Length: 76
Image (cartoon, rainbow, N blue to C red):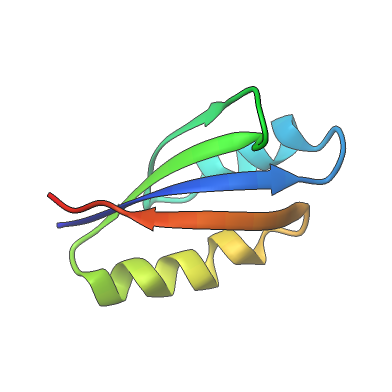
């Protein structure tokens, strides 16, 4: 099982909208609003690292109001 934590910056005042869109993705295990440099933190899981990469680049980066992301792959 591959796990990643993704820190997300959204467009101004789009945090709640992006949060709701992320909750609909099957690979998203959890998503939280956070204070600080980033707006959201997302935990994503997939069966393999390749599948994880496809889902992050295909699904998460396709959400319109996401400005930028920082993906950290967990070492378990």
